[in-house]
Image (cartoon, rainbow, N blue to C red; front, side, top):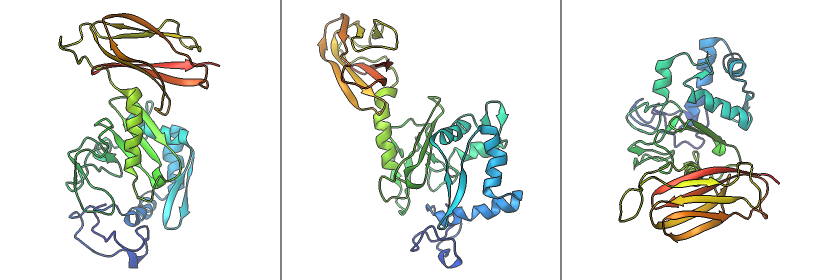
Length: 309
């Protein structure tokens, strides 16, 4: 992305010589430009003697269990696969280039460079990976440097593959999670990072870490909230949710589905210290996984529920 070639040509995917025009010295300008990136397939072929599909199969797929293949689409080499295989690739990155105890990417120095800022121009870009938690970022088709993190709602240690038409792999080492998104392009942008931000806003409703703070004049919460069900998972339509409030405060207990959508508000009012039980009527909900989230001030707890019907 620092070739210095003009990314403002009519077709930024074009790899023909007349599309690759000099604009600045290499290393002096960052621009999201697919054409030069696509030309790397010939570098791979020269270095290994293998095509991209042969390299993927022998070096990655047989070790990780991934499936898929590269196909030519216009000038692009597009990898077609499944959500499960995308998740496997994310787990490979989460595990620092190893599948279990089997090394796949053996160059640890390259791995470190890949998931950290690769150049001084765009601090939120590694080697083909977008990096969160940096003081600034740049976006495709503009030379403006934006202050702040690329996805402010996401964890700072997020590294993300934001691929063609909004196909995402998000890797968060600090939370030990990987999530993928496959679907239609949400808009016409080359990298729809705003969609990734909206996804994280939803995920935060169920991923919010527990805090020991409490918005109350008495200060910190003495022993923390207690949140549990009076019957173990899986639960049914008449399961009671019990919570213990050690000091007075406004309580909000909400149920969310897997997409982070609010499906029920069980409690939303100020309560005195004490032990409370509220019934969750799930008669109108489909079976599946849900989350209920208890918040008192800045203190949050989240639990997972499995609804059987």
